[in-house]
Length: 177
Ligand code: SF4
Image 1 (tube, rainbow, N blue to C red):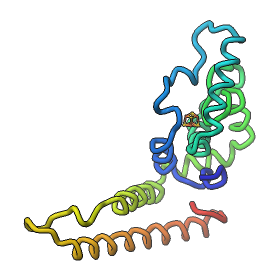
Image 2 (cartoon, protein in one colour; image 1 turned 60 degrees about the vertical axis):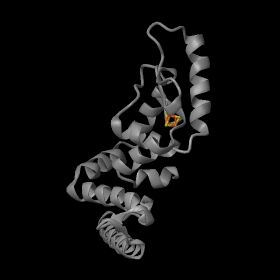
Image 3 (cartoon, rainbow, N blue to C red; image 1 turned 180 degrees about the vertical axis):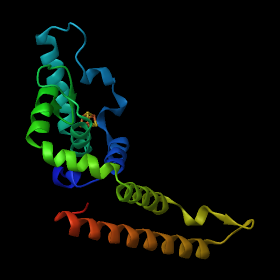
Image 4 (cartoon, rainbow, N blue to C red; image 1 turned 90 degrees about the horizontal axis):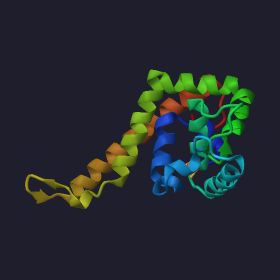
């Protein structure tokens, strides 16, 4: 996911991307935060290492966008890293993009956005199902399962497309909403 795509993606999808591929998931989360009274020199070295890890993280764009929508970072306190940016950098981006972020947060809250998120989650779940492993009435019905799964996936994809098309038309966005 690129930064541009992340900006037009709803919160649940962003969170799913972070949950699926965050490079920091297996690390100590404290490494991304400055300790109380930690000397600036020590923190600078740890901050640089955290940013280095973030730079190669496949979820970086989604993580940064979530951090911005969550209001992470403080212009006066250098004490964290998220999405490859320090807390002060996040605060600067939030200020520069305040209008866009307010609209994104509003969209995250709206009913249509929640429906879109739910449909996207179900679509991913359906696509990940193994139709050959499901049983019906005690015996394998692989063909029926595949047909049923394909129909459901098509229906979900059509619903998502319809909602996104309507949102793009209303918002004037050029990419997926
Ligand atoms: S960008 Fe950095 S903070 Fe965000 S999920 Fe990846 S490693 Fe973690």
